[in-house]
Length: 317
Image 1 (cartoon, rainbow, N blue to C red):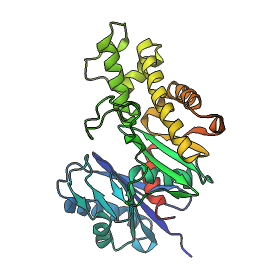
Image 2 (image 1 turned 90 degrees about the vertical axis):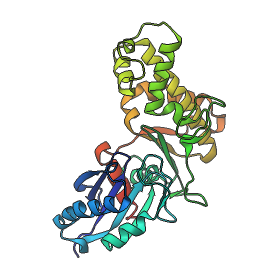
Image 3 (image 1 turned 30 degrees about the vertical axis):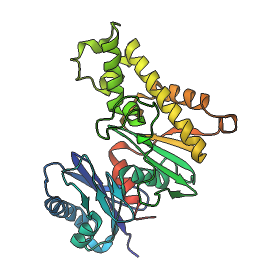
Image 4 (image 1 turned 180 degrees about the vertical axis):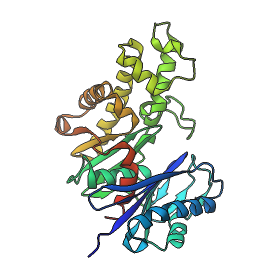
């Protein structure tokens, strides 16, 4: 019996990564194409078909492929559609899974990108063997996937688990993408970290290395690098971010009582700068029955492969 493989496709606002994955979670071949240069979804799928077919041939052709898993913003597992994704060039409801299936003549499963990351973590990563955990992705935004009894929670419409949009500070910071105020994503994302730094610099005259950067151009990476150099303002930003994230995680723990919370994404590179205050404030906000029971772990998946692995894992389920 010849080995079979799956394809993982991760659709991002700027680029789309794809790769061929074996049952052990090895990415055998991978590449990417631009997303944002394709104003029409048809031309995007044509481009993906052309480039991905080259990789499929390298592993023995389409007969060796079990199917294609896709992680996409606002991807709906029930319908296979991408619905009103704000950071993609294609508007409205796109029947993406069906279009891909028709083009490749292969089974296709599609879900939201954070849910795909959770499935990947459960199959290949830090949550391997766990039946109860929450995945939080800390990148440009805050994504999440909730797994209970070994199953992702999708809700009645396929969009459950948007923990990044839960309100943590009533009437707090405005989220420009949703128009809502005080969401977790407004504070605990890379964008939120930069915003917090800019607010401190604007509202105080405290010295900081960050003042050497033009106002409005500060990034979370700048804040991290300043914190590494013992910059007090930068360290305070991470303390504040960890406080908000920890308070939120306490709420999530009391909702689903997970074995662990797995953190993934660019902000985790800050290590203890973010982890220490997050853990401290999570425990401080838990009632006694939940205290000291839930692990906070960083993802074990290699960041460059994680999105492909997560999407591909949908086809092994």
